[in-house]
Length: 184
Image (tube, rainbow, N blue to C red; front, side, top):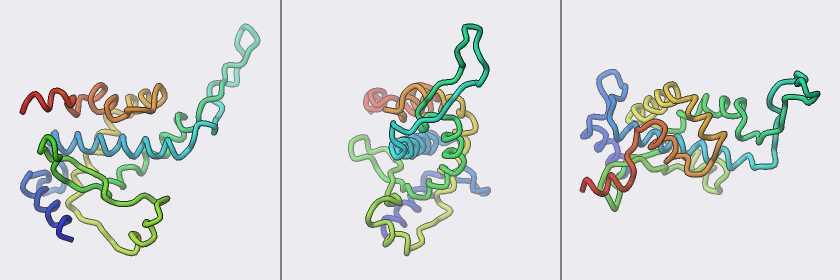
C-alpha cells in the first residue's frame, strides 16, 4: 500500500495529469507508455509461438500461374495485431512509477503478475485500480493511434528489441540510453 501511495504522490508531483484526467505531452509518460506497450506486445507475441501460421495475401492467380498467398506467423498477422492493440492499453494499470536506480529518472515498471503466473489467482482477489494511471493509458492510446502503421511494420519485420525500434527509432518518444547517460 505504501508503494502505491508513493507512486500516486510521484504522479501528482510530476504534474502528469490535468483537470480532465488526460496526460499532457510529458516525455516521461509517453516514453513509459511506449515501453510498456512494447513489453505487452512482446509478451503476447511470445505466447503465440512461431509454429502457428496463417495464410496471407490474395487468392488471385498470378500471370506465371502461382497464387499470391503465403503462410506467415500468426503473431505477425494484421488480424492478431489488431485484436491485441484493441485492449492492450487497459493493461497500463499494471504498471507503477518508480525511480531508475542508475539514472534516477522516473520510469514505469510492471508490478502486476500476468494471467499465466502462479500468483495471479491470489492477486486477482484484490482490486488495484487508480485514476492515477489514466495518463499512461491515454498516452498508450495516443501512441497506437499515431503510430499504428509503424507498430505493424516493426513487428512484421522483427519482434526482438521492439521497445528500441518503436520508441527510439520509429516514434522518437524515448531517447537512446547513451544520450540519457551523457546528459547527466
